[in-house]
Amino acid sequence: MALLLVAWRLPIWQAKFSAPQYPQGLDIAAYGHTVSGDLSEINELSHYIGMPPFTFVGMPEMRLWPLVIAVAIAASVLAVVTRRRWLGRLACAGLWLIPVCALADVQFRLWQVGHSIDPTAPIRVPPFMPHVVGPTTLMNFTVHALPGMALVLIAVAAALVSAVPRFVRRMPGNDPAADPELTVR
Image 1: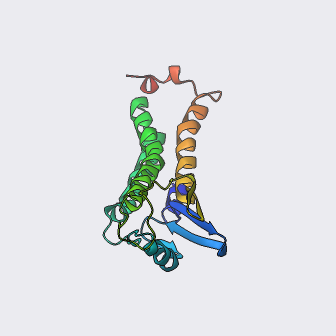
Image 2 (image 1 turned 90 degrees about the vertical axis):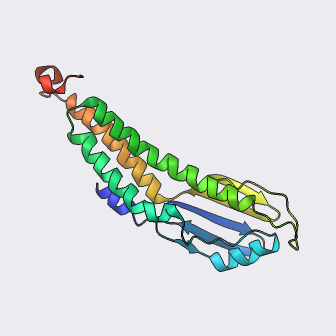
Image 3 (image 1 turned 180 degrees about the vertical axis):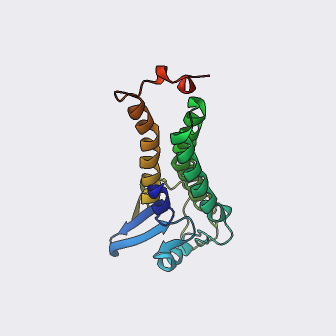
């Protein structure tokens, strides 16, 4: 639960824009509640190729992030305390889906940005697909994207919740066959 609470305030996704004219690079980080970084500079540069500005006001994902974290906490508790294995497995699967779905959502938003190019822009580029993970090159910019620490912590929490109960059940003195409540129904 502590990992999930910490993840709530950490970036979900981040990227670094590199180009010869920006030796230190430009950074962007997407959190559950906001996006930070060199947005004004990135928006100004994107304007020249006809990309819409990065605006995140009113995105439903940002309103849902606290609920996602609350559901993750509930799933982690359920996965550990339930005596029904199928319910614990379902809760673990739900935890594992959070990072996958978050990255899929960011990829969709990146696709939208890369395919909303204004054809009358001063510099014309064809629609493109920025990668949610890994490098994307466009003209003289290379964007290196990676999952943020929030998703890493959620994946670690999912791994712990998936593995620790099995480990505890296999410890000497914790024989599930001796307890009829632990049998699969």
